Image (cartoon, rainbow, N blue to C red; front, top):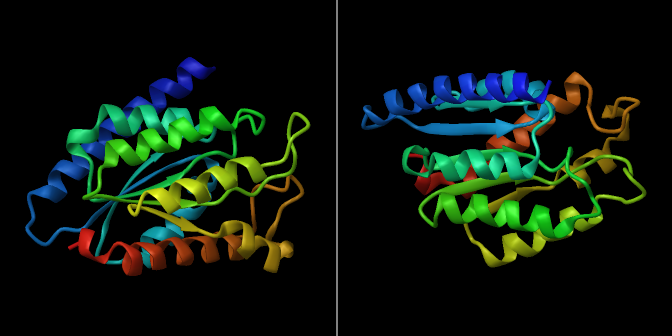
Length: 197
């Protein structure tokens, strides 16, 4: 099954990169790579609407891990747009913070200081006996070290609106996905403006 998913991701990656290359031809084109898991799938239509005037190139895999995202970004570092939206960590093992840390740092390093990486914090119930505070703590510490890593506080948003959450404690209602998209788009427009023109 993982092989099928990997093949699908490869096809989506190729499609997204064609879109990126087309965008680079236009002097005023603004492009965002939307790389993520099932939360990205749910957010995508609302994010495209919120980023009107931007070309949004999606690479989505419902089972994406942070290390998968890091591998995709590292492989394509020469053809990346100036803004990356990354939704990853929800599928990661919360006990292995060091692996998540290395993955996020690899994304940020591959992106480089001339690109902006927007990353929502992680909301999900405990898994394998551990919570996700450690992964969110890693994101916070890395954002303090890397100016090009911009966090969207999804944890705080969901705490304010617990009714958004579905029974699995991860996915959200349409209202929740709209709000997530709005917060991501606001981060792209206000925290990455110099990188999207």
